[in-house]
Length: 252
Ligand code: BTN
Image (cartoon, rainbow, N blue to C red; front, side, top):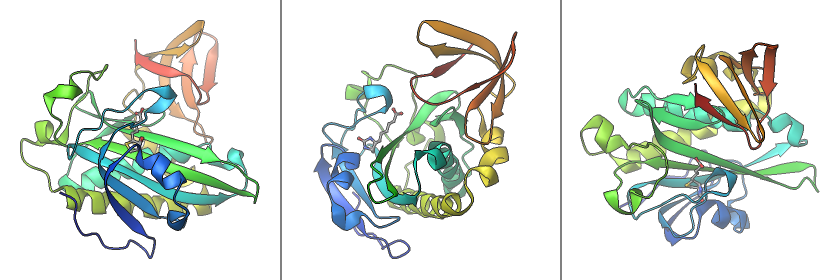
């Protein structure tokens, strides 16, 4: 069970038992709205994934955490934010246990070809010229087969991959540290310092992929990302850049 926790970098950390969603809780808790302010929960009753999906969140089986960051300026500076969070998760896994995870654009974390963690970045208003970002990470540690059997894509957890118990507090602390450090750097320098590293972790680097973008699909070879975080795919018509939104990428 997650018990005590140090304050990271002077930002408040709140530990919760059961919540609807740590992202929702963070949004509604102004006391945590300081850069690096975060909350962690043991379970979520309405965990949310990207594109309106739900995130199954059994008690004590994963890390469910959300961190706040306020960025000066508008959405345009935030194109690469979710990619940077992916890099932070990969770095934290490496530092924690020498685990080599990969990233599936824009920010799914994969281990041995299966999804290990998901990232949900939600951005609100610019009334005061600050973009308020609520950054959620769900990282599977030791999932029970039920209700996890309802997960509709190949997934894994750290226990299965490492074959041993995982110190959840230590992992949480390592992850929060990396998130804080990389968000700080991103606020100062944008995506540029992370471009090469993201590509090094790219699950599909130089592989054939299919881009699912509504009525029209595109196939080509994945060539990494541009400086705005768009995925570059070399198609028959030359290099195409795919920007966020409702696009999914699959192996071809
Ligand atoms: C995805 O891959 O679709 C993103 C999943 C994000 C899940 C995390 S768990 C902590 C935080 N709270 C939520 O409701 N969602 C995120």
